[in-house]
Length: 318
Length: 305
Image 1: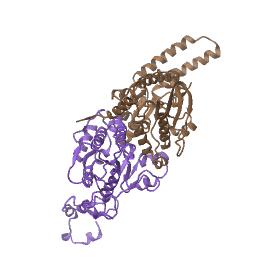
Image 2: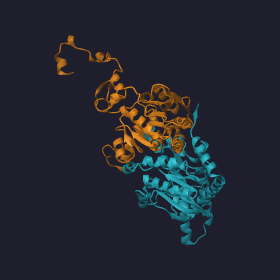
Image 3: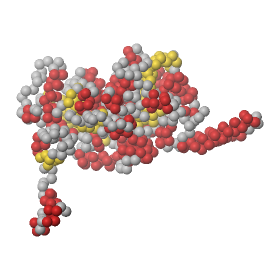
Image 4: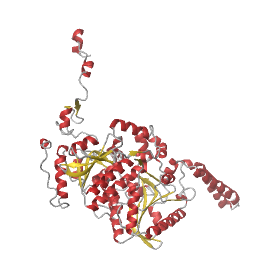
């Protein structure tokens, strides 16, 4: 498996390359060097542990955008059954940057909504790099309202660099589409659990991110603007993205400290892209637990506590 | 040195530099659009709209509220709420320092002023963004004051109006700011449920997180002429799509054409128009209680184009 190592993982990449090489030798010559391989594997693991124990915020930001990370469709495939994708906003178009559908999560019927990025160039373009246009948000809202009608809990998976900054998107009311979702999600009469699985890019993320629970995957990020955008505005240089990432506090650990999170879902050593199955299992277990909690509440209580939760956002003195 | 100055004997030379400073400061302004030199007191009488080209100049939150509300019965809401620095944010400057500078320059604590008052005798609550306070950016204080304004509206059963002028969410508060989009939008659901009118009056500029939350959620969305309104900034879009943006892109007229706003209202008519609209929207609320106010002094009539 091509793990696409990031810059800071280069020492691990070198070890892994050596291991692969030795395996090939073993296969070709049928000589037994499995001890040597095992030793190298141990070293690779402990090296990964060391590097991942001290990740900088910027490194985590790179991990959150790792091209091999599990995306919404991967999670759907691994966590859910009976997935039926639902398309279109009934007004203009279907936006492939947002996936909507019906599914079962451990036999519980749910509505799933998530940003979707692409793996190869062709799919990346098709998915618009996970950057929705207004019709994507309107599709999501249409499906959420349907969830409300049929009393289905909503699972939102967030993974976007942001809402698409394009001419057509502005013409069709990108701002209004996002605003409308924030407004409607605040009072939607069903359980909503939001999880940031990769990049939580500003308003484009929040537009499917208002609900009763906010969860983040360990190596995901969530911020008001990308570190690059923040750096180019405040430092006047995109080179300072590392500083911007740290200043804004965009990692799951930092955001938990800020008091916004209900849970951080741990990822396997080396990040979610190393082991989809475990990653999805961890998230599924978390979702089921929170869903069970939320289902205990009456709808009135649910909505009252969601409203209170939203009103508590912000820090000021009086 | 021009040829005239070279020819002219030195004893009749005038020192233009000193002469310029003898003109009292703050007496004249230059229109940023048509470069007309305008007498400040005239400009003020004209609601800071250029009499030559109708360019609507940016004005402070307090000036806006002053122009909009009746003189009496005003009461500020949430004045004591002040910003903190939850992230200890620093770029090339500390957020705390930026706040102090902005507070000194604008004499405001943050970028939103909220006031209960009257519009032609009708009780209303009005909120106005101050663009000169860190670009009118929305952080925790802006969100909280906005919500307090809404709560006052709900308590009194009176309409709520916001004048937006903002570059978006305040980066220095990161998620605390981003989530103000959710907070302000959620509070607006209560007005909607109570059947209380909410008018969003967008002024130049209304962008990013403010545009993509409270600004676009009005029962009536209004804009001032030629205001820049949109989600992404024009430069970001240009860099993304790598093509020239169409003429008038993201301006009020463009938004009206594309169905995003109900109408464009000239600042000089805002009191008349909004008062009328509110009277109609509120008509069923209090039957016979508030007839359309007629006894208004002539100050507005003068500007009817």
